[in-house]
Every structure is written in structure tokens, then in C-alpha cells.
Image (cartoon, rainbow, N blue to C red):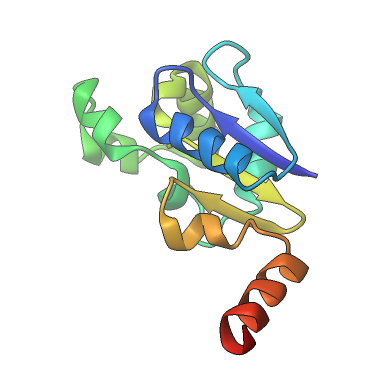
Length: 130
């Protein structure tokens, strides 16, 4: 089952939900602004990323919160996880996990990978052969 992690006042989260509904893709959603992640959950989610914290850490939110990049970069993993859990704005949203695959953000190329493989193959064959 596809799990999406979103925020109510996030335009990319709304776009992802709208796109999933249009594609008729089943999903389970979690609004992390109202039901924050625990430290253990965030560490588990990090195991799905390709680039660790760089994939999920919002540097834009860090700047909005007047946090110093050098001080954030010097934090241990445990300290950074604690900071992100305490301040969910520091977590990029939306992100989605299906199996061992994870996407972060809402990009057309990224979300296309959420379409089940069989449906993508069928669409390609229909496009090629009519």
C-alpha cells in the first residue's frame, strides 16, 4: 500500500493527493502537521532515502526559522532527528513510500513512478500500438 506523508497547508501535498485521486491510486495518508512523526518513525523513513537527511531536510524552512546551516550541519544524527521531529516544518513534504521506493516532493516525473507497473506498461503499449 502506498503511504503518503503530507501537510494540510502545503500546496505540493494538495497536488499529490489530487493527482492520486485522479489516477485512482489507493493510498494511506498521514498529516504530519497534526500527527507528528516519532524519532523512530523518522529514522525508519530515512532508511528509504538515497541521500539520507539531504532528501528530507527542508533547508528553506531552516532559513525561515533563522537556523544557522553550519550549526545544523554539525548536529549528530540523533540531534538532527530530534530537531526535525520537534519542528516538522524542517521535513520536506509531501513524501510517499511504496515498498522500498520513496519519492520526495511533487514532480511530474516522480509521481509517474507511483502508477502501478502494469498500468504504465498498458499505457505504453496503447500509445505505441493504438
